[in-house]
Image (cartoon, rainbow, N blue to C red; front, side, top):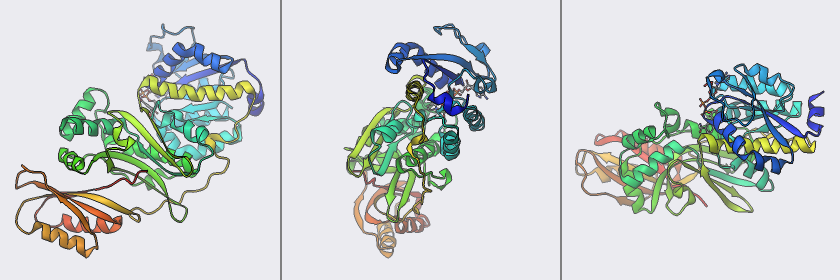
Length: 444
Ligand SMILES: NC(=O)c1ccc[n+]([C@@H]2O[C@H](COP(=O)([O-])OP(=O)(O)OC[C@H]3O[C@@H](n4cnc5c(N)ncnc54)[C@H](OP(=O)(O)O)[C@@H]3O)[C@@H](O)[C@H]2O)c1
């Protein structure tokens, strides 16, 4: 039977295989076991777990499964099994994930993944292969875990023209920042606690330097604008330079500090994309997402902003997202319909990424100096030379004269001018550490 014929055939049982029985694989199967009645009544047919695959599957205790299933440590046996309709890939490693995706699609299987790196780096390849094979792709779990943002963009807001998308997309950094803010503790203390609670990896670089959020915003930009984005073209800045004192100053300005991943349209049909810590108004929904929670603001030209908040990680919440893709695909199999637009677009256009620093922004500039007379005059002279107006000067009391922080807020100016001025300031002899520049997020 050809792939398309398989898809058009009306099924009364849809067969599923899960490859990778780690945190998300186990969470997915557990949710399926617990929710199978609801899922099947939504589907109107049986959804049967046929095969579980993991390298060490024989060591797993699977006594909690309702029915015995086939097990294997070899993913090739799964994708070649003619009885499997949907392959769910949850192995983590991008090379293995890509090989599984290619083989599964080639064999005419519908394919679901939670691998953000696979989709951000090879999404277009998967789309082309899926389209040629007449199979569906599910990527809901790649961004914001259990929060259904991909479905919201692809289905719920399919009639919208998106102007921008902004998100708190990394639970680790949001936990660290919200704990620093809530308890007044330092970055290192909040990170250590996040590691103890399992919110941060022993090596936290991927999260705290913003790389995880960069993959996710690449995917959101892709599905919002129909334009694939090269991940390396997205400028990224992490949270390691944020200090407790930044929250004290931010509060005086009725703002807070958050790691924002954003993509917004710019003149000339361009898109500006970034991951960076920003000053966010405390009244914004993005400022209110607590701890490891994710929050995404979709800005449409007609509907205004739509905000989704929810669990961004964890086996079972992410398992729910995986299963929502499985249910959608199973519905199409049951109804005999085919998927002609994997990931929501029939036509994709290459993105024109706007150069960083071209837009105007108001900014927060924290300087830490070895105190002596004339500092403010030297700093103000540099700003004046770059035609940057100071909006306010703030100084919290009771800091050491050898490491004295103070803050300037700057009126809206083209960011590249601010960056040049800050580079000049960094060379001043009384600077105790490099200046910290945080733009004020322009959120609706
Ligand atoms: N963890 C989360 O909260 C979360 C949230 C959203 C998305 N994701 C994404 O979901 C995916 C899975 O993450 P995870 O946290 O569940 O990872 P994990 O706990 O490390 O689990 C990965 C599993 O895949 C198995 N595996 C690895 N290579 C394999 C191969 N070649 N063949 C068969 N099995 C293989 C491993 O096998 P053995 O243990 O049997 O050796 C392991 O059980 C990743 O892409 C991740 O980015 C995770």
